[in-house]
Length: 322
Image (cartoon, rainbow, N blue to C red; front, top):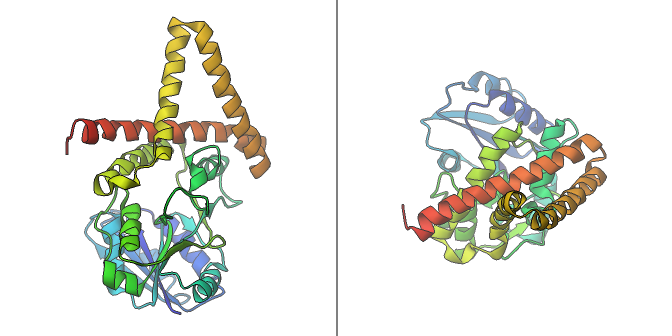
């Protein structure tokens, strides 16, 4: 099996350097790498060229059109049997392709996704953000595992599709705002088999600050409504949880002003919830600092997603604005 690894890139030269470095250590070497520079003002051509002696790597520069269409650009030029998509802020374990190859030969998946985790070199904030995005105490608990709600939808930071899928279902038709979920649903509807490869994890940096994380999760909340507009049946009860949490927090703040007795109950519920997050993160990450930051990251994950979700729910669903 020959893999084509496709990486869209936008103004992140240092990240692609670190990602390509991890690919040079893959135990399975039957692969090519296509880096698609999507109209960056700080291009990484010189960095990519440094790896031409150690990797079968190709660099392309195209006008900016978003990550979904940058991946399509790579699909059109890939020569592999299987296309693997990574985000540029990922680090790839050395046995990743070996794991994927062995699993695909045994299970015959047409498309797959894998989980993400925090690398030991990540900052405490990055580890806390990773915890929030994978924790059973947030909506991250349904991502990257077999206990998801409904069909499994691979996420584009760690996703693969066969050449047959691309030839029949095509590529991405959205360039952002939930483009990976839309693509997964369309792959399902085309009759292909999608599955999770639990051991095929990547180390996903995500955002390096809480402010960046807030913007990203607010965008994700809006993206869920965008998916709903294409596929109404894909809006599940669990997707309303961040919005419900956000409303509960606002209600608690309001009660502190107008009715303190009820506020005490609300505050106690929130305190218990955050204490559970603290001790669970402490158990997972082994440090008090990351555990404390995990409370902040989880709060941001839920409220930012909830606000973005509510913003576009009222705008596009209730008031029917485009």
